[in-house]
Image (cartoon, rainbow, N blue to C red; front, side, top):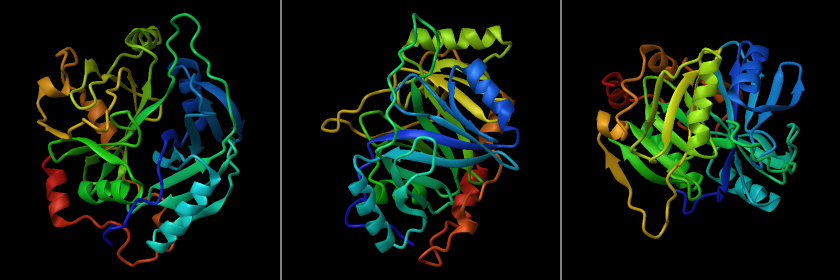
Length: 331
């Protein structure tokens, strides 16, 4: 199935949260609550919701899973009416809905729907979720504000990019050769990036710090817990954001970042960046990523929710082509 919608089904306002499935949820929660800087706002058996200092009820949800996997990605729409309109358009395109529009039974409440993308990822579109107060960090404590972006491994970068731009209305900010695409839904350079790979998986989740000072203090705080960066600190070319990568107790990659480039829609020009050390890290401070973090970024093959829905078209779900497989193996 190709995606040639006359127009996107909705206007995404922001990235709300990411849900991760891990075998040991309590251990993961302890890391993100006690070490990483998030606050647990609600828990229910093996599920935990954690927030940053920003306006979202939570930015990370941890769920029980047999292995590491993406539980889902949640985006904000403006109103429940936009959710209903998106559902009609998605259905017309033959895109499977995992949850029809209606009140959400998640801790954040709200009204929304859940769709399944061509590689089996669960995508939530929601509005009217519970309001919370901004909690700017006291003094200079290193506390993440929000999810900056999530990078997802894809077996077909062109098809994944086409779905999220043509159907969900995102825009391509930049490319890293033909290996990564950086997509935005608002003025921030990217909230999702796709990385060409042999299989579908979570690559990493990035958490935005309030300033570069908070970013560096966060690295220092982790070092006091005996945790050193596995790549960074440095400053990327695409997105111009600072970066420092770590692995959590489940083996998933988490990143502190700050100062993400802001896009002026009227003047921004998409560029293709060469994959060179000086463009991957403009500061030249990070050095190469460790073997451990490279392995963790590759992730575990994840079919997501594809077996739980019946798509409207037999060729909806992505099957890796020979070209995609050979391209992935070359990297």
